[in-house]
Length: 139
Ligand code: ATP
Image (cartoon, rainbow, N blue to C red; front, side, top):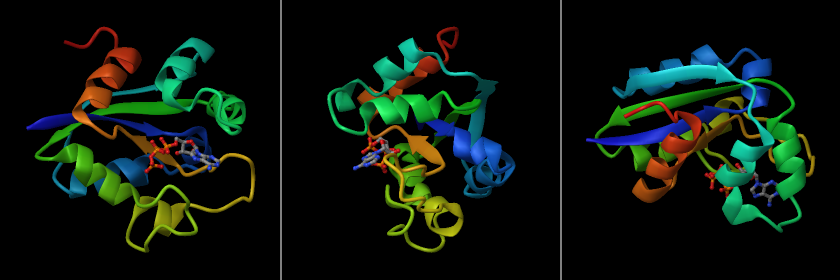
């Protein structure tokens, strides 16, 4: 079994979709191992999004991620890294397939940052790194 780091981004929390998103995760059979609502710090976000540093959407993305509370969760299950990304759908909410979180609930605001409701780790290495970043106390 595997773990992934899921974030409900500030647009999702603001729109009251945290419960709906967690419901979909649990309905799929994945298990919540840790959940917290927090105001992300610039330090954590710069480390979380390190691979995007220098890209044109990087600073707006960090700013967006600090525009309100974020719900962070450690989610466990068989192949959950791939499985959650498939639940989330394509990065761009307009292109995301119906049935996915972004496809059903995401809106394309035409802004500099895709406010696409959720984040999910993209590999076991990222998951370990991101879980350590968002849940420093977790074994
Ligand atoms: P996915 O690849 O499924 O979107 P992700 O959220 O990790 O997962 P990344 O490509 O790692 O996607 O990008 C991180 C975030 O940065 C995106 O979710 C989105 O909010 C923002 N982003 C990525 N690419 C762009 C872009 N071209 N323009 C605006 N924002 C972007």
